Length: 539
Ligand SMILES: Cc1cc2nc3c(=O)[nH]c(=O)nc-3n(C[C@H](O)[C@H](O)[C@H](O)COP(=O)(O)OP(=O)(O)OC[C@H]3O[C@@H](n4cnc5c(N)ncnc54)[C@H](O)[C@@H]3O)c2cc1C
Ligand SMILES: *[C@@H]1O[C@H](CO)[C@@H](O)[C@H](O)[C@H]1NC(C)=O
Ligand SMILES: *[C@@H]1O[C@H](CO)[C@@H](O)[C@H](O)[C@H]1NC(C)=O
Ligand SMILES: *[C@@H]1O[C@H](CO)[C@@H](O)[C@H](O)[C@H]1NC(C)=O
Ligand SMILES: *[C@@H]1O[C@H](CO)[C@@H](O)[C@H](O)[C@H]1NC(C)=O
Ligand SMILES: *[C@@H]1O[C@H](CO)[C@@H](O)[C@H](O)[C@H]1NC(C)=O
Ligand SMILES: *[C@@H]1O[C@H](CO)[C@@H](O)[C@H](O)[C@H]1NC(C)=O
Image (cartoon, rainbow, N blue to C red; front, top):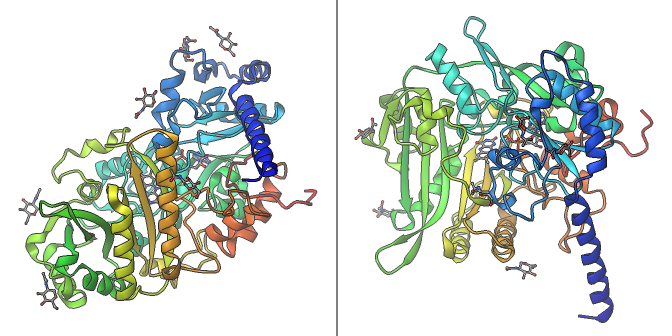
């Protein structure tokens, strides 16, 4: 390495160190005046002091850690907030927004904490967290088939409360019960009802939000532009979501699930190839997710590829077997592979609880397992050929020395193909066969380990280039990936915001920027991948 380059690198290192030192040193002077500002906004019936946690409070660490869902950001070197405000009332949110602007502070908003990159609770500059977990009421109105759900509710709580009132209703969102409403609905939200009913955001009819001026707005008072933006454009760019009003969807009292695995020795490649030609065209009542991973077979540590098909059918097993034998006989589904159950239990089954686990496990706020993780996403427009699949298996087996990688394919089609791409900020509609999620999990801290797995994820993503969408290479906003918009040399690309913006939102990015510029011209609601404002706009 040249002396010159080395000098630059050490300068850079010093610069970075000083940055992180700044971020660590809590801005105690501004912290004090910020707290005074918060207290001055306190309402007698809703004292804000009970919601303020600074590092000198003995509960600070446990409050911070309670909603960290990626252990990569649970280390001593992770930048910590100088304050956490655990809002107990709307007025606390309003105070946070007004006082943070007055003191020019970075605010991060956290609901369920599932952001893959920790964007809701980590920052490279001094910051505080507005934590929403206390605001989690759920009001179901079966008569009008709607519900108001607060941002801090988890999806498991939403599903449980719906089922308490009605066995014939559900809601299309993730099957991971600990995910938070605030981030999930704000960024799209999909689950196994997607082919029948679309995304979470396709079923939101109203919202309450605190805007940059500290006003509490609903759909009518915020207007249709802002209401459009907070249904998939990433609500954190536009305001603080207090609650969403959702439209419940109808589900039968009996649904059917199955999980069937095939190894390469059991013709996984042929079946996967066939899956790609049917999964997006099947009966809308049927959703079959596909997992590709690597397992050991025999006793000699031989590795092979495995395809696992996980399904939800909105109907009974007899009908399911008949649909499958007509549309997808290659899988050879038998009635004995199927389990009939309730919709609520199907969520448990999908998230790896055994059937007949008590329903109220959905109310548990702590995930079954926590790992160190990195995620990426891609869209598949055309079926991958058998030869292509062989290449992918080979790469997976090569990379998967430590059983860390899974590819998850979620089929599109059905209702997803009918909703116009401009209807909500989420643009990946007709013309998509499936979305791939790259899952890489590990269980150890340390910089080298982290680098190793992050490198591995990027390698996998490179290998997949020929098989996925191009110009742009699309990505799902809720699968936050801070690599997007970063060049190979690790530097932010020129107009980085546009790079991730187009990947996440395609043609809708422009409208998001326009709305952002109008409702938050000072860019108060910002984070690592927020919607940028127009650079030279005056208003
Ligand atoms: C285990 C796991 C499973 C998942 N499964 C799925 C899935 O099946 N389908 C799917 O679509 N996604 C899934 N995701 C991704 C998930 O939808 C996103 O991470 C989502 O943003 C999480 O919402 P949250 O409130 O839990 O996260 P948070 O980390 O709290 O928030 C995520 C983002 O939203 C912002 N935000 C949070 N609350 C508010 C608010 N009240 N107002 C404004 N902005 C807010 C945050 O600032 C942050 O930018 C999964 C994630 C994990 C970790
Ligand atoms: C920490 O904050 C909580 C809630 O505001 C408060 O009840 C408690 O007394 C505080 N503890 C300390 C050590 O300041
Ligand atoms: C804790 O920190 C806050 C703000 O930094 C300060 O106002 C308060 O006096 C401190 N409390 C204690 C008990 O040290
Ligand atoms: C997060 O880190 C803290 C401090 O090291 C530790 O006590 C805690 O167990 C960690 N959380 C998890 C889920 O591992
Ligand atoms: C795999 O396919 C071959 C050729 O079509 C067939 O003969 C064989 O029985 C299949 N194996 C399994 C386990 O299904
Ligand atoms: C699921 O279905 C299988 C096969 O029909 C059956 O043996 C099993 O008992 C069922 N499990 C539950 C919990 O119903
Ligand atoms: C990760 O990749 C970078 C850049 O290619 C390389 O410098 C580094 O050594 C790799 N780290 C590990 C642990 O593999």
